[in-house]
Image (tube, rainbow, N blue to C red; front, side):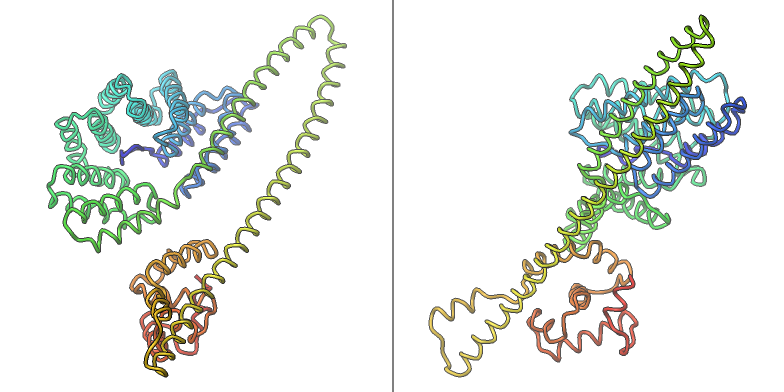
Amino acid sequence: MMPCPVRIVVFCLLFALTAKAGERQQPPLQSKRATQWCDSLTKQAATYYHKNSYQSALKSYLQALKIAEDHRLQKQRAFLLNNISALYIDLYQPKNLPNTQKGLQYAKQAVEALKALKTDSIEKRAALAVAYINYGDLLNSYGTDSKRPEFQQKAIAVFSEGIDFVKNTADYDTQANLYANLAYTYKNLNDKPKYFFYLQQAYRLTDQHPSAITLYVKQGVNFALGEYYSISGNISKALLHLHEAESLLKQEADPNYQMMNLVYGLANTIYQQTGNYKLAHQYQTRYWHIKDSLLNAETLRKFEEMEVRYQSERKGRQLKETALQLQNANLMRNALMAVAVLLCLSLFLFYRAYKNRHRALLLKQEVADMALQKAGVELAANRRLLERHTASLVEKNHLIDGLQQQLLQTGKADDKTLSKLANSRILTRQDWEEYKRLFDKVHPGFFIKLRSHFPDITDADERILAFSRLNISVKEAAALLGISYESMKNSRYRLRKKIGIQNDVDLKEVIGKM
Protein backbone atom coordinates (compact mmCIF):
# COMPACT_ATOMS: atom_id res chain seq x y z
CA MET A 1 0.00 0.00 0.00
CA MET A 2 1.40 3.35 -1.06
CA PRO A 3 5.08 2.68 -0.92
CA CYS A 4 4.42 1.24 2.54
CA PRO A 5 5.67 -2.36 2.56
CA VAL A 6 4.12 -3.21 5.91
CA ARG A 7 0.43 -2.85 4.99
CA ILE A 8 -0.15 -5.51 7.63
CA VAL A 9 -3.04 -7.59 6.45
CA VAL A 10 -2.64 -10.58 8.75
CA PHE A 11 -5.11 -12.76 6.87
CA CYS A 12 -4.01 -16.00 8.48
CA LEU A 13 -4.61 -14.44 11.91
CA LEU A 14 -7.90 -12.89 10.85
CA PHE A 15 -9.12 -16.20 9.38
CA ALA A 16 -8.17 -18.13 12.52
CA LEU A 17 -9.85 -15.55 14.75
CA THR A 18 -13.03 -15.61 12.64
CA ALA A 19 -13.17 -19.41 12.84
CA LYS A 20 -12.69 -19.39 16.63
CA ALA A 21 -15.38 -16.73 17.00
CA GLY A 22 -17.78 -19.03 15.20
CA GLU A 23 -16.90 -21.94 17.49
CA ARG A 24 -17.32 -19.99 20.73
CA GLN A 25 -20.45 -18.04 19.89
CA GLN A 26 -22.75 -21.09 20.37
CA PRO A 27 -25.74 -19.67 18.44
CA PRO A 28 -29.32 -20.79 19.01
CA LEU A 29 -30.54 -23.80 17.10
CA GLN A 30 -32.06 -21.78 14.22
CA SER A 31 -28.74 -19.92 13.66
CA LYS A 32 -26.37 -22.88 13.74
CA ARG A 33 -26.74 -23.57 10.06
CA ALA A 34 -26.18 -19.90 9.23
CA THR A 35 -23.05 -19.87 11.38
CA GLN A 36 -21.67 -22.95 9.65
CA TRP A 37 -22.40 -21.46 6.26
CA CYS A 38 -20.76 -18.18 7.25
CA ASP A 39 -17.62 -19.97 8.52
CA SER A 40 -17.43 -22.07 5.35
CA LEU A 41 -17.50 -18.95 3.14
CA THR A 42 -14.83 -17.32 5.33
CA LYS A 43 -12.51 -20.31 4.86
CA GLN A 44 -13.18 -20.21 1.13
CA ALA A 45 -12.31 -16.50 0.99
CA ALA A 46 -9.05 -17.06 2.89
CA THR A 47 -8.07 -19.74 0.35
CA TYR A 48 -8.74 -17.37 -2.54
CA TYR A 49 -6.72 -14.65 -0.84
CA HIS A 50 -3.65 -16.83 -0.42
CA LYS A 51 -3.84 -17.57 -4.16
CA ASN A 52 -3.87 -13.78 -4.84
CA SER A 53 -7.41 -14.13 -6.24
CA TYR A 54 -8.71 -11.01 -4.50
CA GLN A 55 -11.92 -10.69 -6.52
CA SER A 56 -13.08 -14.20 -5.58
CA ALA A 57 -12.05 -13.58 -1.96
CA LEU A 58 -14.15 -10.42 -1.82
CA LYS A 59 -17.18 -12.21 -3.25
CA SER A 60 -17.00 -14.91 -0.58
CA TYR A 61 -16.46 -12.36 2.22
CA LEU A 62 -19.46 -10.27 1.13
CA GLN A 63 -21.67 -13.37 0.99
CA ALA A 64 -20.55 -14.30 4.50
CA LEU A 65 -21.15 -10.71 5.71
CA LYS A 66 -24.69 -10.77 4.31
CA ILE A 67 -25.44 -13.99 6.22
CA ALA A 68 -23.91 -12.59 9.42
CA GLU A 69 -26.03 -9.42 9.21
CA ASP A 70 -29.23 -11.31 8.29
CA HIS A 71 -28.86 -13.61 11.31
CA ARG A 72 -27.38 -10.98 13.64
CA LEU A 73 -24.11 -12.89 14.14
CA GLN A 74 -22.27 -9.95 15.68
CA LYS A 75 -18.90 -11.64 16.19
CA GLN A 76 -18.70 -12.95 12.65
CA ARG A 77 -19.79 -9.56 11.30
CA ALA A 78 -17.02 -7.75 13.20
CA PHE A 79 -14.29 -10.10 11.97
CA LEU A 80 -15.58 -10.05 8.38
CA LEU A 81 -15.60 -6.24 8.31
CA ASN A 82 -11.96 -6.42 9.37
CA ASN A 83 -11.14 -8.84 6.54
CA ILE A 84 -12.91 -6.74 3.90
CA SER A 85 -11.10 -3.55 4.97
CA ALA A 86 -7.84 -5.48 4.63
CA LEU A 87 -8.80 -6.48 1.07
CA TYR A 88 -9.25 -2.81 0.19
CA ILE A 89 -5.65 -2.28 1.33
CA ASP A 90 -4.49 -5.01 -1.08
CA LEU A 91 -6.49 -3.39 -3.90
CA TYR A 92 -5.20 0.10 -3.12
CA GLN A 93 -4.59 2.48 -6.06
CA PRO A 94 -3.22 6.01 -5.37
CA LYS A 95 -5.54 7.70 -7.87
CA ASN A 96 -8.68 5.84 -6.78
CA LEU A 97 -9.75 7.97 -3.80
CA PRO A 98 -13.39 6.70 -3.78
CA ASN A 99 -12.10 3.14 -3.42
CA THR A 100 -9.89 4.17 -0.47
CA GLN A 101 -12.91 5.91 1.11
CA LYS A 102 -14.92 2.68 0.92
CA GLY A 103 -12.09 0.83 2.62
CA LEU A 104 -12.07 3.51 5.34
CA GLN A 105 -15.79 2.95 5.98
CA TYR A 106 -15.32 -0.80 6.43
CA ALA A 107 -12.24 -0.28 8.63
CA LYS A 108 -14.04 2.21 10.88
CA GLN A 109 -17.04 -0.13 11.19
CA ALA A 110 -14.67 -3.00 12.05
CA VAL A 111 -13.08 -1.05 14.93
CA GLU A 112 -16.49 0.00 16.26
CA ALA A 113 -17.98 -3.50 15.91
CA LEU A 114 -15.04 -5.16 17.69
CA LYS A 115 -15.13 -2.64 20.54
CA ALA A 116 -18.89 -3.23 20.92
CA LEU A 117 -18.51 -7.00 21.42
CA LYS A 118 -19.34 -7.89 25.00
CA THR A 119 -16.31 -10.07 25.54
CA ASP A 120 -12.63 -9.64 26.32
CA SER A 121 -11.37 -12.79 24.62
CA ILE A 122 -7.91 -13.22 23.14
CA GLU A 123 -9.44 -13.47 19.66
CA LYS A 124 -11.23 -10.16 20.03
CA ARG A 125 -8.11 -8.35 21.29
CA ALA A 126 -5.97 -9.73 18.48
CA ALA A 127 -8.55 -8.79 15.84
CA LEU A 128 -8.95 -5.29 17.29
CA ALA A 129 -5.17 -4.78 17.13
CA VAL A 130 -5.24 -5.69 13.41
CA ALA A 131 -8.25 -3.37 12.92
CA TYR A 132 -6.23 -0.45 14.30
CA ILE A 133 -3.54 -1.24 11.72
CA ASN A 134 -5.99 -1.43 8.80
CA TYR A 135 -7.84 1.74 9.79
CA GLY A 136 -4.62 3.72 10.33
CA ASP A 137 -3.13 2.47 7.06
CA LEU A 138 -6.16 3.60 5.03
CA LEU A 139 -6.25 6.97 6.81
CA ASN A 140 -2.57 7.51 5.99
CA SER A 141 -3.12 6.58 2.33
CA TYR A 142 -6.16 8.78 1.92
CA GLY A 143 -4.46 11.75 3.60
CA THR A 144 -1.37 11.39 1.40
CA ASP A 145 -3.26 10.99 -1.89
CA SER A 146 -5.79 13.75 -1.19
CA LYS A 147 -3.06 16.02 0.30
CA ARG A 148 -5.08 16.39 3.50
CA PRO A 149 -2.64 15.96 6.41
CA GLU A 150 -5.46 15.95 8.96
CA PHE A 151 -6.18 12.35 7.91
CA GLN A 152 -2.52 11.45 8.49
CA GLN A 153 -2.66 13.05 11.95
CA LYS A 154 -5.71 10.93 12.67
CA ALA A 155 -3.76 7.88 11.44
CA ILE A 156 -1.00 8.70 13.94
CA ALA A 157 -3.60 8.83 16.72
CA VAL A 158 -5.06 5.46 15.63
CA PHE A 159 -1.62 3.80 15.45
CA SER A 160 -0.69 5.26 18.85
CA GLU A 161 -3.93 3.94 20.35
CA GLY A 162 -3.13 0.53 18.87
CA ILE A 163 0.38 0.56 20.33
CA ASP A 164 -1.01 1.41 23.79
CA PHE A 165 -3.51 -1.43 23.33
CA VAL A 166 -0.85 -4.14 22.69
CA LYS A 167 2.33 -2.81 24.29
CA ASN A 168 1.91 -4.85 27.47
CA THR A 169 1.17 -8.09 25.59
CA ALA A 170 3.39 -10.70 23.95
CA ASP A 171 1.95 -9.87 20.52
CA TYR A 172 5.29 -8.62 19.17
CA ASP A 173 4.24 -9.16 15.56
CA THR A 174 1.40 -6.65 15.83
CA GLN A 175 3.63 -4.22 17.74
CA ALA A 176 6.20 -4.33 14.93
CA ASN A 177 3.41 -3.78 12.39
CA LEU A 178 2.12 -0.73 14.23
CA TYR A 179 5.58 0.81 14.60
CA ALA A 180 6.36 0.26 10.90
CA ASN A 181 3.06 1.80 9.78
CA LEU A 182 3.55 4.73 12.15
CA ALA A 183 7.03 5.21 10.64
CA TYR A 184 5.59 5.42 7.12
CA THR A 185 2.99 7.93 8.22
CA TYR A 186 5.78 10.19 9.47
CA LYS A 187 7.66 9.56 6.22
CA ASN A 188 4.69 10.86 4.23
CA LEU A 189 4.63 13.91 6.51
CA ASN A 190 8.36 14.47 5.75
CA ASP A 191 9.34 13.97 9.39
CA LYS A 192 12.55 12.00 8.77
CA PRO A 193 13.77 11.69 12.41
CA LYS A 194 10.49 10.11 13.60
CA TYR A 195 10.32 8.03 10.42
CA PHE A 196 13.72 6.48 11.23
CA PHE A 197 13.01 6.21 14.99
CA TYR A 198 9.87 4.09 14.58
CA LEU A 199 11.50 1.93 11.89
CA GLN A 200 14.24 1.19 14.42
CA GLN A 201 11.59 0.30 17.01
CA ALA A 202 10.03 -2.20 14.59
CA TYR A 203 13.42 -3.70 13.69
CA ARG A 204 14.36 -4.00 17.37
CA LEU A 205 11.29 -6.17 17.97
CA THR A 206 12.11 -8.44 15.00
CA ASP A 207 15.66 -8.81 16.32
CA GLN A 208 14.69 -9.47 19.95
CA HIS A 209 11.73 -11.79 19.25
CA PRO A 210 12.44 -13.46 15.87
CA SER A 211 10.26 -16.50 16.52
CA ALA A 212 7.24 -14.31 17.34
CA ILE A 213 7.42 -12.26 14.15
CA THR A 214 5.94 -13.49 10.85
CA LEU A 215 8.08 -13.75 7.73
CA TYR A 216 5.96 -11.11 6.00
CA VAL A 217 6.54 -8.54 8.73
CA LYS A 218 10.29 -9.25 8.79
CA GLN A 219 10.39 -8.81 5.01
CA GLY A 220 8.54 -5.51 5.23
CA VAL A 221 10.69 -4.07 8.03
CA ASN A 222 13.95 -5.00 6.26
CA PHE A 223 12.63 -3.55 3.00
CA ALA A 224 11.66 -0.32 4.78
CA LEU A 225 15.12 0.08 6.35
CA GLY A 226 16.79 -0.72 3.02
CA GLU A 227 14.68 1.97 1.39
CA TYR A 228 15.53 4.46 4.15
CA TYR A 229 19.28 3.86 3.88
CA SER A 230 19.11 4.00 0.08
CA ILE A 231 17.44 7.43 0.23
CA SER A 232 19.99 8.53 2.85
CA GLY A 233 22.94 7.40 0.70
CA ASN A 234 24.18 4.70 3.10
CA ILE A 235 24.51 2.01 0.42
CA SER A 236 26.29 -0.60 2.56
CA LYS A 237 23.43 -0.70 5.10
CA ALA A 238 20.85 -0.53 2.31
CA LEU A 239 22.40 -3.64 0.72
CA LEU A 240 22.50 -5.41 4.10
CA HIS A 241 18.75 -5.02 4.64
CA LEU A 242 17.97 -5.74 0.98
CA HIS A 243 19.81 -9.08 1.17
CA GLU A 244 17.99 -9.91 4.41
CA ALA A 245 14.60 -9.18 2.79
CA GLU A 246 15.49 -11.38 -0.20
CA SER A 247 16.61 -14.19 2.08
CA LEU A 248 13.30 -14.02 3.96
CA LEU A 249 11.35 -14.11 0.68
CA LYS A 250 13.12 -17.36 -0.27
CA GLN A 251 12.05 -18.95 3.02
CA GLU A 252 8.38 -18.51 2.15
CA ALA A 253 6.71 -21.27 0.12
CA ASP A 254 4.15 -18.86 -1.36
CA PRO A 255 5.63 -15.33 -1.20
CA ASN A 256 3.39 -12.28 -1.51
CA TYR A 257 3.55 -10.76 -5.03
CA GLN A 258 3.35 -7.18 -3.78
CA MET A 259 6.25 -7.71 -1.36
CA MET A 260 8.34 -9.33 -4.12
CA ASN A 261 7.60 -6.34 -6.36
CA LEU A 262 8.70 -3.88 -3.66
CA VAL A 263 11.96 -5.76 -2.96
CA TYR A 264 12.84 -6.14 -6.65
CA GLY A 265 12.16 -2.44 -7.26
CA LEU A 266 14.42 -1.49 -4.35
CA ALA A 267 17.16 -3.82 -5.61
CA ASN A 268 17.05 -2.12 -9.01
CA THR A 269 17.43 1.29 -7.35
CA ILE A 270 20.31 0.27 -5.06
CA TYR A 271 22.30 -1.52 -7.77
CA GLN A 272 21.96 1.52 -10.01
CA GLN A 273 23.39 3.59 -7.16
CA THR A 274 26.37 1.21 -6.95
CA GLY A 275 26.90 1.26 -10.72
CA ASN A 276 26.17 -2.46 -11.11
CA TYR A 277 23.83 -2.01 -14.08
CA LYS A 278 23.82 -5.69 -14.99
CA LEU A 279 22.19 -6.67 -11.67
CA ALA A 280 20.00 -3.56 -11.80
CA HIS A 281 18.68 -4.70 -15.19
CA GLN A 282 18.01 -8.23 -13.91
CA TYR A 283 15.98 -6.94 -10.98
CA GLN A 284 14.15 -4.48 -13.18
CA THR A 285 13.10 -7.37 -15.44
CA ARG A 286 11.84 -9.35 -12.41
CA TYR A 287 10.05 -6.24 -11.17
CA TRP A 288 8.06 -5.85 -14.39
CA HIS A 289 7.23 -9.56 -14.56
CA ILE A 290 5.74 -9.42 -11.06
CA LYS A 291 4.02 -6.09 -11.72
CA ASP A 292 2.26 -7.59 -14.75
CA SER A 293 0.93 -10.35 -12.47
CA LEU A 294 -0.70 -7.95 -10.00
CA LEU A 295 -4.19 -6.51 -10.16
CA ASN A 296 -4.99 -4.24 -13.10
CA ALA A 297 -7.62 -1.60 -13.71
CA GLU A 298 -10.11 -4.18 -14.96
CA THR A 299 -9.91 -6.08 -11.67
CA LEU A 300 -10.56 -2.88 -9.71
CA ARG A 301 -13.53 -2.10 -11.95
CA LYS A 302 -15.05 -5.54 -11.25
CA PHE A 303 -14.30 -5.06 -7.55
CA GLU A 304 -16.28 -1.81 -7.48
CA GLU A 305 -19.16 -3.35 -9.46
CA MET A 306 -19.37 -6.17 -6.94
CA GLU A 307 -19.47 -3.63 -4.10
CA VAL A 308 -22.38 -1.82 -5.81
CA ARG A 309 -24.30 -5.09 -6.22
CA TYR A 310 -23.74 -5.90 -2.56
CA GLN A 311 -25.04 -2.50 -1.42
CA SER A 312 -28.10 -2.88 -3.69
CA GLU A 313 -28.86 -6.30 -2.22
CA ARG A 314 -28.49 -4.89 1.27
CA LYS A 315 -31.01 -2.09 0.60
CA GLY A 316 -33.39 -4.58 -0.99
CA ARG A 317 -33.11 -6.79 2.08
CA GLN A 318 -33.95 -3.87 4.36
CA LEU A 319 -37.06 -3.08 2.28
CA LYS A 320 -38.19 -6.72 2.50
CA GLU A 321 -37.73 -6.69 6.27
CA THR A 322 -39.92 -3.56 6.51
CA ALA A 323 -42.61 -5.20 4.38
CA LEU A 324 -42.47 -8.31 6.56
CA GLN A 325 -43.07 -6.22 9.69
CA LEU A 326 -46.18 -4.71 8.10
CA GLN A 327 -47.41 -8.17 7.17
CA ASN A 328 -46.91 -9.30 10.78
CA ALA A 329 -49.10 -6.41 11.93
CA ASN A 330 -51.83 -7.53 9.54
CA LEU A 331 -51.51 -11.07 10.89
CA MET A 332 -52.62 -9.79 14.29
CA ARG A 333 -55.93 -8.55 12.77
CA ASN A 334 -56.82 -11.46 10.62
CA ALA A 335 -54.79 -14.66 11.05
CA LEU A 336 -56.52 -16.68 8.37
CA MET A 337 -56.22 -13.97 5.72
CA ALA A 338 -52.57 -13.37 6.63
CA VAL A 339 -51.73 -17.07 6.28
CA ALA A 340 -53.36 -17.13 2.84
CA VAL A 341 -51.55 -13.95 1.76
CA LEU A 342 -48.26 -15.23 3.10
CA LEU A 343 -48.66 -18.53 1.27
CA CYS A 344 -49.42 -16.76 -2.01
CA LEU A 345 -46.55 -14.37 -1.50
CA SER A 346 -44.17 -17.24 -0.73
CA LEU A 347 -45.20 -19.05 -3.91
CA PHE A 348 -44.78 -15.85 -5.92
CA LEU A 349 -41.37 -15.12 -4.42
CA PHE A 350 -40.25 -18.69 -5.00
CA TYR A 351 -41.38 -18.54 -8.64
CA ARG A 352 -39.74 -15.13 -9.18
CA ALA A 353 -36.53 -16.28 -7.53
CA TYR A 354 -36.49 -19.37 -9.73
CA LYS A 355 -37.03 -17.28 -12.89
CA ASN A 356 -34.39 -14.74 -11.85
CA ARG A 357 -31.89 -17.46 -11.03
CA HIS A 358 -32.54 -19.16 -14.38
CA ARG A 359 -32.21 -15.83 -16.22
CA ALA A 360 -28.99 -15.02 -14.36
CA LEU A 361 -27.51 -18.41 -15.24
CA LEU A 362 -28.33 -17.92 -18.93
CA LEU A 363 -26.81 -14.43 -18.88
CA LYS A 364 -23.71 -15.69 -17.09
CA GLN A 365 -23.32 -18.49 -19.65
CA GLU A 366 -23.73 -16.01 -22.52
CA VAL A 367 -21.11 -13.66 -21.07
CA ALA A 368 -18.72 -16.56 -20.51
CA ASP A 369 -19.21 -17.79 -24.10
CA MET A 370 -18.56 -14.31 -25.48
CA ALA A 371 -15.43 -13.91 -23.36
CA LEU A 372 -14.16 -17.33 -24.48
CA GLN A 373 -14.85 -16.52 -28.13
CA LYS A 374 -13.09 -13.15 -27.80
CA ALA A 375 -10.08 -14.76 -26.13
CA GLY A 376 -9.91 -17.35 -28.94
CA VAL A 377 -9.98 -14.63 -31.62
CA GLU A 378 -7.26 -12.64 -29.84
CA LEU A 379 -5.07 -15.73 -29.44
CA ALA A 380 -5.45 -16.62 -33.14
CA ALA A 381 -4.59 -13.05 -34.16
CA ASN A 382 -1.51 -13.04 -31.94
CA ARG A 383 -0.47 -16.43 -33.31
CA ARG A 384 -0.75 -15.15 -36.91
CA LEU A 385 1.17 -11.99 -35.97
CA LEU A 386 3.95 -14.11 -34.43
CA GLU A 387 4.12 -16.30 -37.55
CA ARG A 388 4.32 -13.24 -39.82
CA HIS A 389 7.03 -11.74 -37.63
CA THR A 390 9.03 -15.00 -37.82
CA ALA A 391 8.63 -15.11 -41.61
CA SER A 392 9.76 -11.48 -41.83
CA LEU A 393 12.93 -12.25 -39.89
CA VAL A 394 13.66 -15.26 -42.14
CA GLU A 395 13.09 -13.05 -45.19
CA LYS A 396 15.63 -10.55 -43.78
CA ASN A 397 18.16 -13.32 -43.52
CA HIS A 398 17.52 -14.49 -47.11
CA LEU A 399 18.00 -10.91 -48.34
CA ILE A 400 21.38 -10.72 -46.63
CA ASP A 401 22.40 -14.11 -48.05
CA GLY A 402 21.50 -12.89 -51.54
CA LEU A 403 23.46 -9.68 -51.11
CA GLN A 404 26.48 -11.58 -49.84
CA GLN A 405 26.32 -13.96 -52.86
CA GLN A 406 26.20 -10.97 -55.20
CA LEU A 407 29.30 -9.51 -53.54
CA LEU A 408 31.14 -12.86 -53.79
CA GLN A 409 30.25 -13.32 -57.47
CA THR A 410 30.77 -9.78 -58.77
CA GLY A 411 33.12 -8.38 -56.14
CA LYS A 412 31.08 -5.24 -55.89
CA ALA A 413 27.55 -3.96 -55.39
CA ASP A 414 25.72 -0.83 -56.36
CA ASP A 415 24.83 1.87 -53.85
CA LYS A 416 21.25 0.67 -53.55
CA THR A 417 22.40 -2.86 -52.71
CA LEU A 418 24.90 -1.63 -50.14
CA SER A 419 22.22 0.52 -48.55
CA LYS A 420 19.93 -2.53 -48.17
CA LEU A 421 22.75 -4.53 -46.62
CA ALA A 422 23.64 -1.76 -44.17
CA ASN A 423 20.02 -1.40 -43.03
CA SER A 424 19.37 -5.14 -42.56
CA ARG A 425 19.91 -6.88 -39.23
CA ILE A 426 19.39 -10.50 -38.23
CA LEU A 427 17.33 -10.60 -35.00
CA THR A 428 18.65 -7.41 -33.41
CA ARG A 429 17.87 -6.72 -29.76
CA GLN A 430 14.86 -4.67 -30.88
CA ASP A 431 13.73 -7.55 -33.11
CA TRP A 432 14.02 -9.99 -30.20
CA GLU A 433 12.14 -7.78 -27.74
CA GLU A 434 9.28 -7.41 -30.23
CA TYR A 435 9.41 -11.15 -31.00
CA LYS A 436 9.39 -11.97 -27.28
CA ARG A 437 6.43 -9.65 -26.67
CA LEU A 438 4.40 -11.38 -29.41
CA PHE A 439 5.48 -14.82 -28.17
CA ASP A 440 4.27 -13.97 -24.63
CA LYS A 441 0.80 -13.18 -25.96
CA VAL A 442 0.53 -16.58 -27.66
CA HIS A 443 2.19 -18.53 -24.83
CA PRO A 444 1.69 -16.38 -21.68
CA GLY A 445 4.08 -17.03 -18.80
CA PHE A 446 6.41 -19.17 -20.97
CA PHE A 447 9.62 -17.26 -20.16
CA ILE A 448 8.84 -17.03 -16.43
CA LYS A 449 8.29 -20.83 -16.24
CA LEU A 450 11.41 -21.37 -18.35
CA ARG A 451 13.57 -19.42 -15.93
CA SER A 452 11.92 -21.16 -12.99
CA HIS A 453 12.72 -24.65 -14.34
CA PHE A 454 16.14 -23.80 -15.78
CA PRO A 455 17.57 -20.81 -13.83
CA ASP A 456 21.09 -21.21 -15.30
CA ILE A 457 20.19 -20.78 -18.98
CA THR A 458 21.50 -17.79 -20.95
CA ASP A 459 19.56 -15.38 -23.19
CA ALA A 460 20.80 -17.36 -26.22
CA ASP A 461 19.51 -20.61 -24.65
CA GLU A 462 16.19 -18.89 -24.03
CA ARG A 463 15.86 -18.09 -27.74
CA ILE A 464 16.66 -21.66 -28.80
CA LEU A 465 13.99 -23.04 -26.45
CA ALA A 466 11.45 -20.48 -27.71
CA PHE A 467 12.10 -21.55 -31.32
CA SER A 468 11.74 -25.21 -30.27
CA ARG A 469 8.37 -24.39 -28.69
CA LEU A 470 7.24 -23.03 -32.10
CA ASN A 471 8.57 -26.15 -33.87
CA ILE A 472 11.08 -24.08 -35.90
CA SER A 473 13.72 -26.30 -37.53
CA VAL A 474 17.43 -26.11 -36.69
CA LYS A 475 18.15 -24.60 -40.09
CA GLU A 476 15.46 -21.92 -39.73
CA ALA A 477 16.59 -21.13 -36.18
CA ALA A 478 20.17 -20.71 -37.41
CA ALA A 479 18.90 -18.35 -40.09
CA LEU A 480 16.94 -16.34 -37.55
CA LEU A 481 19.94 -15.97 -35.25
CA GLY A 482 22.36 -15.22 -38.10
CA ILE A 483 24.70 -18.14 -37.31
CA SER A 484 25.80 -21.22 -39.22
CA TYR A 485 23.89 -24.50 -39.17
CA GLU A 486 26.80 -26.23 -37.38
CA SER A 487 26.99 -23.50 -34.76
CA MET A 488 23.28 -23.89 -34.12
CA LYS A 489 23.63 -27.69 -33.72
CA ASN A 490 26.52 -27.19 -31.26
CA SER A 491 24.50 -24.64 -29.29
CA ARG A 492 21.55 -27.05 -29.02
CA TYR A 493 23.92 -29.86 -27.95
CA ARG A 494 25.43 -27.71 -25.18
CA LEU A 495 21.95 -26.63 -24.09
CA ARG A 496 20.83 -30.28 -23.80
CA LYS A 497 23.79 -31.06 -21.57
CA LYS A 498 23.19 -28.00 -19.43
CA ILE A 499 19.56 -28.83 -18.68
CA GLY A 500 20.12 -32.62 -18.55
CA ILE A 501 18.16 -33.78 -21.61
CA GLN A 502 19.23 -36.89 -23.59
CA ASN A 503 19.80 -36.62 -27.34
CA ASP A 504 16.87 -38.92 -28.13
CA VAL A 505 14.40 -36.68 -26.27
CA ASP A 506 12.64 -33.92 -28.21
CA LEU A 507 13.19 -30.42 -26.76
CA LYS A 508 9.63 -29.43 -27.66
CA GLU A 509 8.25 -32.40 -25.67
CA VAL A 510 10.20 -31.35 -22.55
CA ILE A 511 9.13 -27.71 -22.85
CA GLY A 512 5.50 -28.68 -23.42
CA LYS A 513 5.37 -30.46 -20.04
CA MET A 514 6.26 -27.31 -18.08
